[in-house]
Length: 341
Image (cartoon, rainbow, N blue to C red; front, side):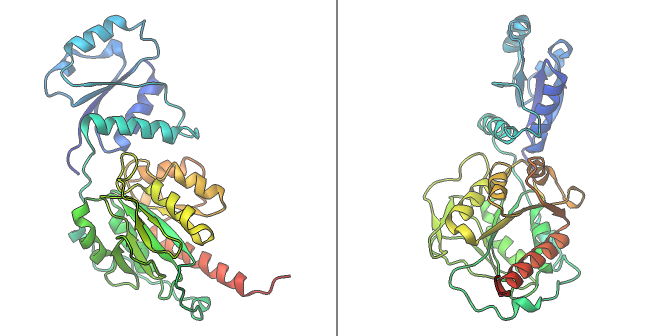
């Protein structure tokens, strides 16, 4: 990853400094100094030492002399925060962090996530899950009956490929993938993800129809929603917020546009907290939200952020997530076959 801007954090509370530092690093920026005002060394005022200061002082009157010095001496721009951070487990934390990220992007731009697609093995998963009996008698459907959102960022392609490689044929699920990646990599990503498995991958362009056994990769340049017949529709607008594509927005649109056919969401390896706002709302409707386990992620801040909201009902490796999905769909089909009382 390149363009990891250098950030200095100044806070008059150790806890606030820790929360700010964790949030900044979780987005892919470098925190090169995290200090209280009294302990700030003059060398950090030097030109080219930092790209941005992030400052949060609970009592500005107390630190007026320090602020005067900072404003006079600092070479890097200064971002003043507008309120104390809530606890990471607080329901308002994802929105606080999202506001901070938006301001960081305005000042120093987005960290560029560069994925090495060429180093992903042809077949990541070692085993493929056997096809359940319940999958074999499913008639073709014009509109997908189960649409699951996959969200990923740094380290996501390898994790998503391992997940897809494990899935059996005739899985009655359509996927929409929101992967943070440069737009020029979308077509190569399609080729990597569909290699040596039963899933057909395509870039989600306006007018395309989504079917079972397919994965549509959300475009980077514009947001998408879905028509009543399951066709992909460009909104004509960029993605909202600092992430493109926005996992939160994809989850929201799949949930709203597919209704009862919206299956759930799975968050894979990634940086940042995209998904942490929409995923709890999805879970509140009774739909499952799962996440890749921290120890199996190349970067776990994204699934960890969603986990911290309390909405994740299952965590596991990509292979375990695939097994969980197959079993979930098998139970749904079996229950549909059973006569009601």
